[in-house]
Amino acid sequence: MKLKFRGLNVRVVETVHAAKAIDFLFQEDVLGQQETRTLLQKTDRRQQCRDLLALLHESGHPKAFLKLYDAIKKEPAYQWLIDEIDNCPTGRPKY
Image (cartoon, rainbow, N blue to C red):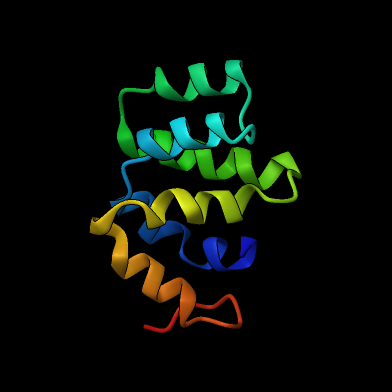
């Protein structure tokens, strides 16, 4: 899952509003209180998403990207991203 998100990094940063995902990841104990606070203080949504992805890549949390997938799946507007992830077995997006 981590490789799939890495392959879609630019598209995710350009299109995903991360605030709800951040709240969900805090709820699921993927992000700590300080990390959540720092991310939610960002006013630029792209920078917020970029920083979230970087933090998850660095975290080493075994389910970080599975939980991010779960958070994104809750948002109907991101069905395109779920479809892309689900149809991309190698971690490389199909363009």
